[in-house]
Amino acid sequence: MTLKAKLEQLAHRVWSSINPISIALTPLSWITARVIKRKHKTYLHNPGWHPNVPVIIVGNIFVGGTGKTPVVISLTQTLFEKGWRPGVVSRGYGVKSTGKAQAGRGRLDPNTFGDEPALISSRTNVPVSVHPKRVEAVQLLLKEYPETNVIISDDGLQHLQLDRDIEIIVQDSRGIGNGLLLPAGPLREPEQRLNQADVIITNQLSIPDQQDKADDNSIRLKPYQTTMMLKPTYAMHISTGKRIQWEEWLVKHIDTPIAAVAGIGHPKRFFAMLANLDIQIGFTRTLPDHGKITQSDFQDINQEIIVVTAKDAIKCDNINDDRVWSIEVEPVFSNPDWIDHITRRLAQL
Image (cartoon, rainbow, N blue to C red; front, side, top):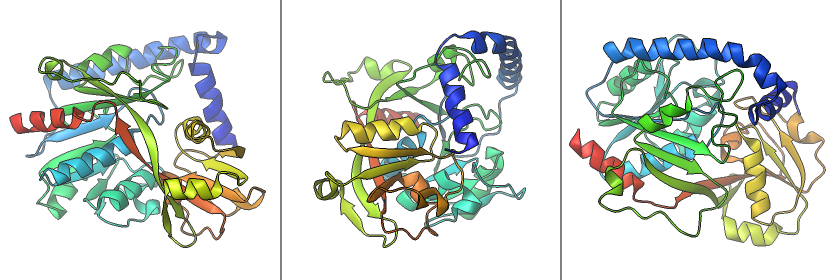
């Protein structure tokens, strides 16, 4: 495990409870609270820039990965199927900004666009644009792809320079951690921010037996809430690009010694998902989120099969190791009608 990955794990352990370290850091969280309050006050009286198409933000208040990207992919695909022409904007984490926004579609270079935008583009084939300032990303996307009639921002809940029509917050089983703001806790904004969202999606390892049921009253409630779980659909062999349906791959390798490697915001969730599927994981390795992946990350692993996330697979073009497979997942929602709730909102704009 790299030093950066170890520090990330340590931070999340601290943020899981009230403890001497989090208490010592609390005065710094008061500064964070003042900055947040001033920022929201500024944009309350002077809203950010808004394009001539609707804007949907998919974000979180918990720092790190909660499952936003699978939600963005699912939302984008569904809106496209319903006749919309979405475009996706993102910051482009993990790449050095050239000062100019980048836009493209299809197979994109993760070194230029970032791993998550590259994954979104490859899975949806919709236009994607990246820049730390989301306004510039949107402006370039609409210039290069004028057919776009709805913008989906992957992250950017706190990026108030871009005005928005709909906010979707994705959280996971960690909830709000110890409930404190950075750096004493994991929150980018106070817990009360959840009440301002239009939809809250909670990413869990399983969906409760009693599924959410929407009715005419619940769809008018704010925030509209549903749960989701990530379900494997395919396994892709990195060296050859061959894709096998998950059930077939699982039957073939269920008794094979397997290692799991993840460089995502919450790698333990990936490992837990595999364990929940009765896969015997003999070795795990955590890599830094958005970091590069090299051949050396796999060389000392002795297991016969190595599995990585689809987000990590985007960065494995130069990996020559026949043992490496990526696991493609899709979200399953306790209430799939949440996207209909979004399309009804879009129709009203």
